[in-house]
Length: 330
Length: 290
Image 1 (tube, each protein chain N blue to C red):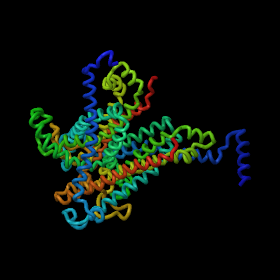
Image 2 (cartoon, chains in turn yellow, blue):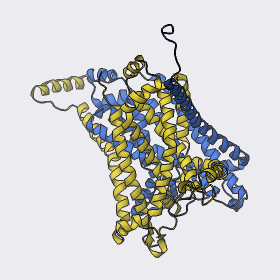
Image 3 (spheres, each protein chain N blue to C red):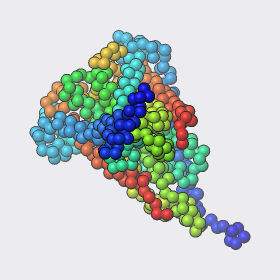
Image 4 (cartoon, each protein chain N blue to C red):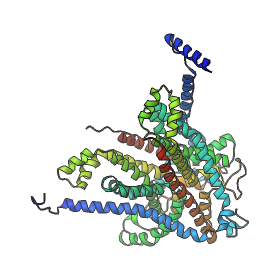
């Protein structure tokens, strides 16, 4: 044993005089580095693989119809070979917009409060609340929507809106069931809130305290400081957080599917039913092999969804990462 | 200050008070939303919950209100989530270690983290559709195995990023000390980073498990649904989220009731996992050097 070690060490020292001979340890290190590197190729390539796989599978329909027919076609009748995604794209759009409009003020105010005003005790309570909210599965949100939000929209919001805002088209109640864009938007707003709040909170926390102190020292109130000093500094990050939330809203399936009504129409009011793309894919997976081109149509819907979400995601992530590593002039 | 000038209530002070008030209100709304969700699920789920629900598989006529339970879905979900988490761990632990010990804040490390974040944002329905194309290509049918593979893909970015965030807080001195003693990077990774990562790994496992067990849209395509408890990886399997979803779609009130009970079971599992991860990581954090 001793002998081996001495002989190895002499070899090492003599070798180093001319050129470094890799010791078993270095070789082990190099081998590990290469193996680990291959593992990291997985996440990077997975994005490409998913996109390509969906593209290949939806190629038959992209080949058979011009893209504009698919995207802007109004009629969805797979048995007759009519695949128009327009009502579904609009449905996705409406539901996500309503969700975002409801979520943004709530998230912005909550994250400002947590970052700027709250004592550490309030924060230590708020964090687990947000974690739990983020942990609740989509299907449970769907059940909640079905049991609480749909009746609430039907019994409270719809009559109120009908009475006071009925003359404005987007608030008129045409299909009084409670199921629809507004119910889905409310559920979505609560679902994406934890993510948006935690991203916004982190971005607010990057602002150095010197800026706050300087503003407060010249007599500004705390809100003036936030409004005039902090918000302009973090505005790109706030917008990125909202875009990130929107990308989550676009892809949400089960919870939305359960409360949105699923009627393929071009919605005109927030009380109308809609049929977003993810719901279309989830509802029809069963029969998609039985009708020609149906599976390609549904997978191309998934592809459209994926591409939009990828763009949203990559843009917002780049901005957020830049904000989080930002070096402040001192 | 007070003797120099009396503080007058200006518009800006009113605005300050008002903004603070609506901020508190919005925080309360967020917290109330959580309370409301849990309350509704408990109130509607508890009456339908029975011992049979969690110990029996559906009997004949179960979907018309006759006897039985959803043991098939509970076990199926546990198998799916456990398998997916295990598979995701095999890949996420090396990636997280590599990110810390070899890449640090390098360019490639930046790309890997970005791609993980982007993967995190891909909705589960797209993963489900991808799984479907994969199943056609490989010629396998809806099965436990297909479900596990897709859940592993969904959990991979979550788990890797969770570990990465924890291990990033490891003091750089530890790494320097080990390197100064002549360790290779691999030895640093194996002997220093892995130990410091332990709380991160447990948090990540539980996070991934919680996400996996609650995911419905992906298993809809890949795992199928059956009334039996799966006996092999190639068989289809039931899952709790789909049990909730399908039972709520039933016209029979008794079956809908059981859907609420299934939602309660799912919520309890997910919350237990979430709280457990919080508790475990705070316990294990005691054994790391900060």
